Amino acid sequence: MAHRTISDDELLTRALELFRTFGFEGVSLKQLAEATGLEKASLYYRFPGGKDEIAMAVVTWVAGGMQQLIFDPLATGGGTARRRVQLICERLREFYGCGLKSCVFDLMSIPGASQELKEALRATMQAWLDAFAAVAKEAGISGAQARARAEEAITRIEGGLVLSRVMGDGAPFERALKAVPELLGTA
Amino acid sequence: MAHRTISDDELLTRALELFRTFGFEGVSLKQLAEATGLEKASLYYRFPGGKDEIAMAVVTWVAGGMQQLIFDPLATGGGTARRRVQLICERLREFYGCGLKSCVFDLMSIPGASQELKEALRATMQAWLDAFAAVAKEAGISGAQARARAEEAITRIEGGLVLSRVMGDGAPFERALKAVPELLGTA
DNA sequence: GTCTATAAAGAGATAGAC
DNA sequence: GTCTATCTCTTTATAGAC
Image (tube, rainbow over all chains, first blue to last red; front, side, top):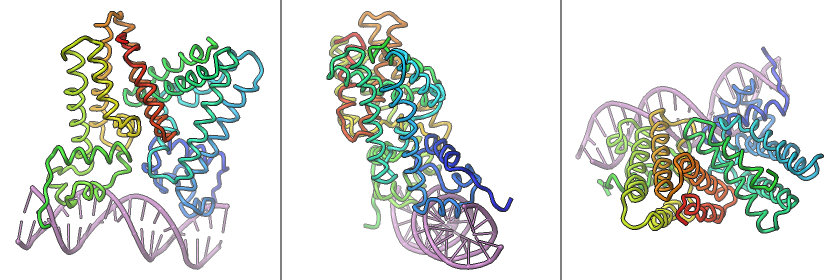
């Protein structure tokens, strides 16, 4: 085929799968070209900054997706806090492939990518902490405690993903996720 | 200097610092040569299998160190269970640089290295789980609960390290580590 | 907007001197 | 046991046709 094309969403979806699996340093432009069905030169046309810019676009896109699918529904979605936390736990389970996929925060925060990307990860993690703390507070937990519970919930999710990858078994992640509603006061 | 040399321990120490910081794919033989003060060819003399063999040696060496400094003292060290858990928490704090250094289990379990290395990481993580579960059981927690508490403790340590790296702040790790004695029933 | 082709730099790996 | 020198392959990045 002489001319192939692919939507930005589909391109970033496939790039995300590579980066979250192999990390920034573990992914080459050749892999990105194969995964997207484009030639390397075409990737440079769409992302003149090369791999750094692709990675940054992936993280920006993931951050937007989390805002839309996790943070916003937690804050303003319909139903009780309990029901909203249940919903986003289900979405997290899907996003992390029942514990068999790694976290983009984990793999992309390894030194090697740009400073800009590192800052985007930090800001998104902070938004996650804030979203969890707000729902815990809504559930009746005091401000300081709510922030502690939010951090503990995310800590267990991230740690569960690490253990799941090391052990080759999604169960540690599943057990971590199961504890989230109680931690946020919505069990 | 025409002939430099370096002990195996010192070499593996410096290689570990690189691998735990940048991950397997993020470390080149050039970096390893510079960090150890040897030329690449000298590294191949000592590790004919190249980067894979160096990484494997690092993990084997770390596993031995954890056995000696963490697992064994937890099982047979002197003093109460409470005192032994306190001691190994202090050693973990030091090993992880108060949360500012990443975990070798996390970074080296990213696909790219050999299957042998992956299996060594899994076995060492299992030994860690077993060691924590044994001390929790000694502290009076039932078998199934002890295993759950051991997993939760390690999950929080690993997750705390991820959050600390993303946020650029060792505090999440410190808070996770603080919870370990209570989780293991030795608070 | 994607392609083919290629340049330039860096990676892993080996040969052979000392 | 370490060195210098080199080889090959991969990677990033660009030029120019269509």
